Image 1 (cartoon, rainbow, N blue to C red):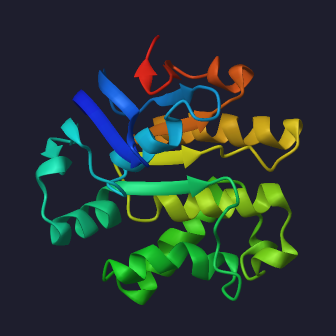
Image 2 (cartoon, helix red, strand yellow; image 1 turned 180 degrees about the horizontal axis):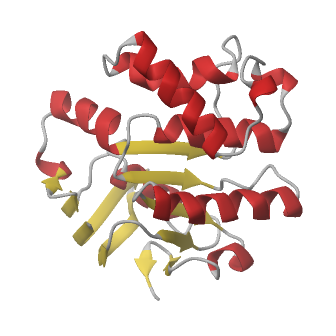
Length: 222
């Protein structure tokens, strides 16, 4: 369960103060695929950064899986991001000198998981996201965009997070491949019991979500 109450984030620009996120409150159950919809500058990415503990709110609270993350120390925030959150980015953000399997193993290595266990889970996850075994040992440059995004999704799932935050996960993909990735995220939300929240400007993708949050000028309007 994700709960936000009166969530706000304010930035100073010259003499002006801009509320990128303005008094947002919502509840979202676990195990669903949800979307944040809005135009550029509507506050989508700022909201995602707050939920992922990449930034701190000016006001309000965020609770994920019973943890009030806005009250955590910096040290505990690092552990929260590692253990509870998975990130998927538009540009995949894979480590280019590591192969697919090594990219998925990396978060587990940081979490102290043993070598044999992380290899076994990484292989299972790559199979689950539909990457064929012959591509496990290929570096990102030798994978298509859709295959790289599959690796990125597997990596996001590595430490069994409660929440996956996806920032325009189909932005660099053609429409057919993008739909495959959206279908995959839907399925993973159910099978992995992970809440997946995707930022998008594509209303067609947003309409496929179980829950849609529409932002406008930092305010939740729908």
